[in-house]
Image (cartoon, rainbow, N blue to C red):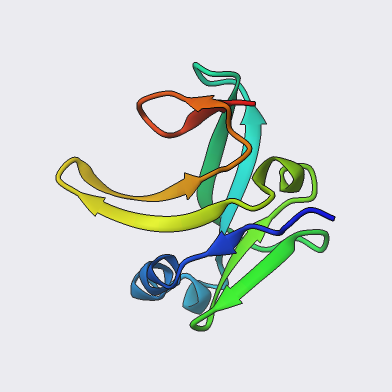
Length: 107
C-alpha cells in the first residue's frame, strides 16, 4: 500500500491566511504530463471533487485526484518563503530528478 502525501503545518497555515476554506476552496495538487522534465505539478485553489483524497488540518484542506495520487505517494507538501518568492513546494521521493524551478520532475 502506498503512503499518502503529507501536508506540513506551515502549508495549512498559509491556506488559512489566504482564507481558502472560507471561500469553499481547497489546495489542489495534481501531476500532469509536460514540463521540462516529463511531469509537472499543478497547484491551485479548487473545489474538492467526489473522488479526491482530502487531507485536512487547521480547518483547511488539500486535495489530490486519484490519477495523481500514485505520483505523490509519500510526498510532503509544504509552503516556502525565500528571497525569490513564496510558494507551495513538493518534496517528492518518487521524483528521480527535477528541474531548477521545482515544478517539473521525472520519474
